[in-house]
Image (spheres, rainbow, N blue to C red):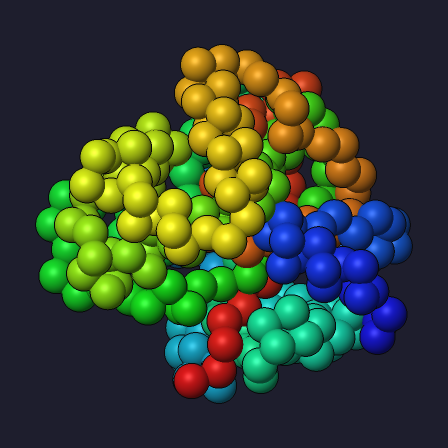
Length: 270
Ligand SMILES: [Fe+2]
């Protein structure tokens, strides 16, 4: 699928940090992937939600006689090849990119938020961090929905352009221009930006001042009104959300249906 990502999509990924591609996977494939993912335990991050990528991990799975997982992984890797995700990820990064993680998980219908507003590559909000990563180290996620999601119902909401704001913050921290303070959550992020000693240093790194000002307003609104759905969207099974994970995003609660997804995570090759 060489035409999966257009020039407009690449521009949107640069400017907004995300793009949604509709109707990419056919219903038969969706059914098959869903059956694979539903064999896992519930929720994100459990060891059995991850699929082996490298020869060594395949070998370990086979040693443990977990042939099914190895076969399921091969199926998901073939899908990645069919969609030409390696090629598209390299185009998005404008550098050779590689798949670094593949997982699939489901959430049962719940009124509990999957994850509140946050950004990734923010040291998970740790208080003490010794080594800071360059802001150029980050991942793109190809997030494939296998069930329907919608506003306030399991979609991954994203504040457009917020990846450019966190880039400036991470750059200031990496270059030791400002002191590190946790900035994982949206309120921590606003706090670090609004800190008197930091504000101008961060502001000066962002060329689009309009974007900066509107981000501050949007972020304040998200904090004040957690039920705000301005950045939510509808997606159907087979749609793909591609996003820069350093932008501010959240996983809303799947209140109406169980949610099933698979994720291909890419980074620049070393
Ligand atoms: Fe995240």
